[in-house]
Structures are given as C-alpha cells and as structure tokens.
Length: 113
Image (cartoon, rainbow, N blue to C red; front, side):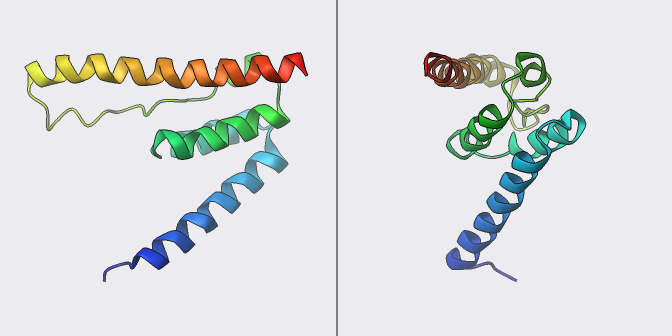
C-alpha cells in the first residue's frame, strides 16, 4: 500500500500536533521528553528544530535541556565503507554544531528579551 503525498502531509501534521501537545503539557517530565526527542532526532533538522524551540519555550532549565538527545543515537553506518565513514563523519560532526549554534542563538535572544 502506497501513501500519497497528501496523506503524508496529513500524517506529518498529526505527528506534529501530538508531539507539540506532549511537549507543551509534559515538558517537566524529562523521562518522557527524552523518549519524545529520541523520536524527534529521526526527523530532518528543519523539522527537528521546531520541537527543540518549543521545549525551550516551556522549559528554560539548562540541566533539563542537556538531558535531551538532539542527535540520532545510531547513524546508518552499514552502508558506508571505512573511508566514506571517515569523510561523512566530518559532515556529521558539522551538523550538530550548526544545530547547537542555532539553539544557542535562539536561547540567547530569549534571555535578552
């Protein structure tokens, strides 16, 4: 059974609403947030950022934020040779740095307000 583009949009919207609701209502439950963010780490960076931003809006605890997984635990390394893994590893290291820079910029703007 193939999912149409329209169905994909509807499913993603439902996912977003559920995850947003969980974050908005249970942001202090760090165990649950860790579970939620384990799922969120599988999303593309652009989509992932909205959930990180939402969490930071409700929970400004640096300690809680540091407990959240922000990167996928497992990279798909089976498809990579040792050489390409090393080369792609450099790119993988740059992505978390960019995400963290965006988060820090946002967090700093929040503190200034």
